[in-house]
Image (cartoon, rainbow, N blue to C red; front, side, top):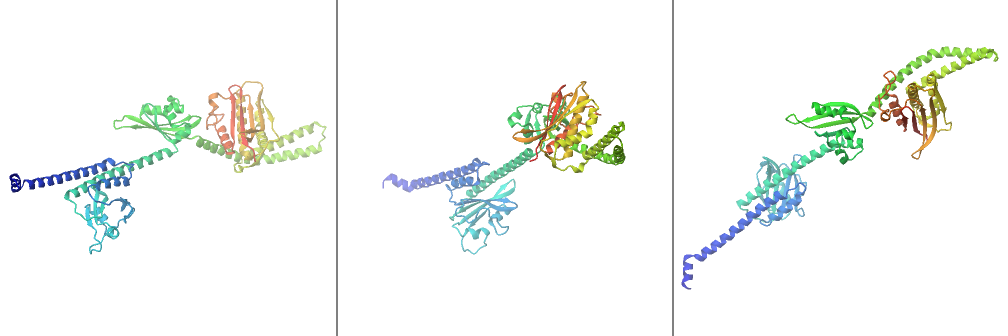
Length: 550
């Protein structure tokens, strides 16, 4: 041994170098461990995504943990309907604790951690005489030897339990327990954020589904009258897709004059407004509700719109039915009062005809008396039939018969106005399945409209042409009643609105605007429609189109 070696041996330099390098190595390993722990926590934060499954996240965490610890399995229990439920196990292959396991309120490690908010470390020793927990009976069937559970605490409340399982017995350093606690806290924050996100997403989805399915048309209008949002009822009404709708202003889309719009009034007054308008040939009710911010500045206007055309048609039919019921009661009384004297008139005229020579002038007078009596009886009978509401039963009936019945009622008052009636009835026309009285209603409404249109004209040759025929429309045989007049005609802008309830160009004493609306409703109830062709000053053609009886 030389002198230098002797000095190193006596002074312990080699020993100190060895100790130094050992400590340095341990320090490096400890730093690497700390860095890996930080990386794991960072992985939890960075890897959190609402679309990422919890199994993927647990897989990533376990891979990182196994670089510094020896762990076989991770557990995640959450609260579901006031019960602690095992939501995730990774990996699931050999675990006896299965997903969906509900932990009992007593004798459960998971439940204990949940209630006490304190972590629990459990060494699983088979057949050892100690208090048995719910989890012991299951985990002793596996190779699990070490079990550690941490509460998932967020904002002071426990939202679940996070567990680590190992098949090895070892003691963790104090810093390791701190790391597990930090990891659990970070995971709790991520789960809470995910729950909040899903709650907001669910609420948003429910609102969108409600908004989309509301039968009323709803618009959200900005301060520049631009449509920022609308529901599906709007698409069905305007028959346009979303891009086309959002490229127009509210007034442009619905073809409304801004001067008549309740939206304009809402912009000016900053108060709720409402109005009934004809929009796209339909009668609609609009309600506008300005939305104001905390500074009382309007940010947008919510518009609710309802198509009330059918509602008004039904109301019109009810009004018309009420009138007909009154006519029916009156007609019944008139019939009883007139039938008795008519019986005497007809009976006596017949007796006198039998005893009077046909060559005498008196015979012709008696024939006139008899014919007028018969005509009066037919008028009363037709009036009773027309107004009898309880007989609106669908059965086989003829358009020709309906026309003949109606002419018994209105021919005289039409011809009194020097209006000629031309009748062209196709006697081979097919029958229909419907209510004769309701078809008569349509015919009488169309005839009276034609009469009133001719009364407004100063012409010599006033004429109404009544035709029945068959046509093939869309490869289906239809039965048609066509009523043509050479009267005043209809203005082009009014043609699309004449069937709207209460729309009328007549004076208040001449009509209520219900006749065509009610007639169209009856036609549709029979599976048909009413078509109109008209030129102002030239006259009109109204055609009732009904399906023939199969």
